[in-house]
Amino acid sequence: MQKKKLVVLTGAGISAESGLRTFRDSDGLWEGYQIEDVATPRAWRKNPQLVLDFYNYRRRDVAAAQPNAAHFGLAELEHDFDVTIITQNIDDLHERGGSTNVLHLHGEIFKMRSERDEELLYEIKGDINLGDTAEDGAQLRPNIVWFEEAVPMIEVAVPVVHQADFFAVVGTSLVVYPAAGLITVADDAIPKFIVDKKIPYTSAIHNVTAIEKPATEGVKDLREILLRLK
Image (cartoon, rainbow, N blue to C red; front, side, top):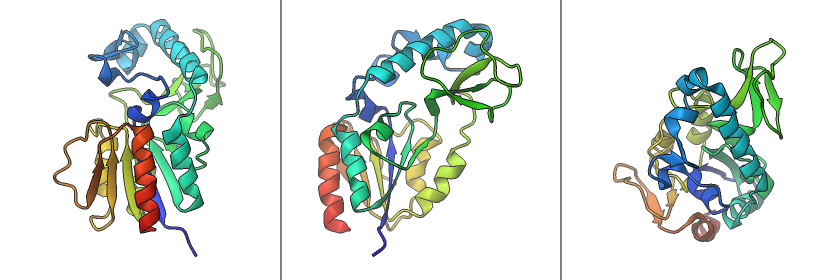
């Protein structure tokens, strides 16, 4: 029998339990930095060294982190469902937790690209330095979608959500667009679930079950409900 399609949108809340802090939990600061100083095209033009230092630090941070029970729990759902993870996170904890179909909306910390040609992509485990160049001679930058940049992967995500039999949101406040709008793309008739320690405003969304718990606890509840429904 063909497995039903489960699409899960994840955000910073799932990685926070692996020790990766989110700027929204720390008064607009991300590891002590103002977002506009390290995560915008203007910041890159103004001080590329600062931006590289910040993401080099983040890369080491992610490498040291480990997947948690929520990552493992979502991966285990692949036994019973055709699962696609759409994540706003730039870490690789879903992949290390065992998920095999992960779509990164906002880029990946372990990839870098030419600042001129976003198709020139490379794996990176260490640091990116000023003067490191792509094949086209342009400076290499993190393969991250910064604030004020387009989110090209949203065009890949929308048809995936359209096909979902179940849609879940785990660990996101649903305030960063266009990712937050994906829940409105899902068919009104399908069951939807939101797992977060603080449930965001969703009164306009139909068929929503709220699980107000941290991701590691809430994903257990989500799995139990989904297995009853499948």
